[in-house]
Amino acid sequence: YDKPPVYYWLVAGSFKLFGVNEFSARFPSAVLALVGVVVVYRSGQRLFGQGAGLAAGLVLATSIEYFYLGKAAVTDITLNLFLTIALLAFIEKRYYLFYIFAGFATITKGPIGLIFPVAIVFLYLLVGSRWRQLKEMKIAKGIVLYAIIALPWYIFMHIKHGSIFAETFLGFHNITRFTSPEHPEGTLWYYYFPVLLLGFFPWVTLMLQSMWHSLTDSRGRFNILLFLNIWAVFIFVFFTVSQTKLVSYILPMFPPLALIVGWYLNRLWDYHYNIRCLSWPIA
Image (cartoon, rainbow, N blue to C red):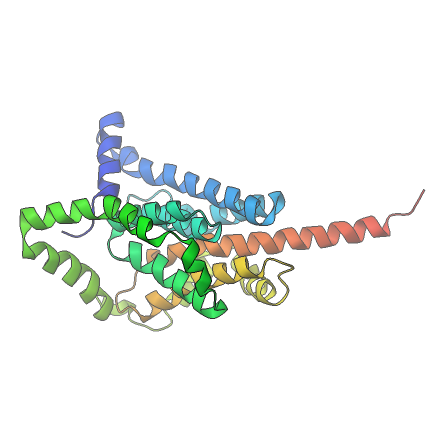
C-alpha cells in the first residue's frame, strides 16, 4: 500500500524486455529523465525562445540531484515528469494536458499529484487576480479527464482491500508522514537549504540572481516567470513544512528553476552579444 503503481508497471515492463537486473530497474527513470529534459527545452523554446530553451535543458540535465535521481530506481523522476508536463501545459494554456498529466501524477505518487498542480495554479491566480482565467480552463471536462485516469486504480484497490488500503496509503503514507517525522534526524527546519545548494549545483550560483531579475526585469515575460517562481517556492515551502523529509522530495522545483536560470542565461548572452556588436569598428 506504499505507493500507486505507475513506476512499478514501468519497471515490470522493463524486466520483461531486459530481464530482472539492476539496469532494468533503473532504465525507466533514465528514459523519463531524458524526456523531462526535452520537455523543459521545448517548453522553454516556446515560452522564451530557442536560446533560453537550450539553456534550460542544459541546466536541468547537469544539476547534480536531477542527474543522480535520473539513474535511480525510485518514483521521483516519474512524478517529476508528469507534474512538469501538467504545470507547463497550464502556463501554455493547453488545459486538457494539464488535467491528463495531473491524473498520471496522482497514480504515480498519490494525492500530491493533484494537490501540487491545484495549489500552484490557485496561488498564481490569487497573486495576479486572474480569476477570469478559470473560465478558459474547461474545468468540468477536465475533472472528467482527470477522474478517468486517476481514479480507477484507487477504486479497484478499495474494492479489493477495503478500508485498510485507505488507512495505510492515505492515512499513514500521506497524512501521517506529512504531520509526523518518519526520519527524526531530518526534522530540521533548514534541511532543504543545503539539499538545494548541493542538488542544484552548479547552477545554484545563479539561482537567486535569476529569480530576482525574473521578477523585477522580466521584459514582457512577467506572468510566465511569476508562475515559475511560485511553482518552485511552493514546492520548497511545502516540504520544509512537512515533518518527513527526504533529499528527493524537492526535485519538482528543479524544472521551473532550470527555466528561470535558462531565461536569465539567455538574457546575459544577448546582452554581451549586443555589447560586442556595438563595440566592433565600422569598416
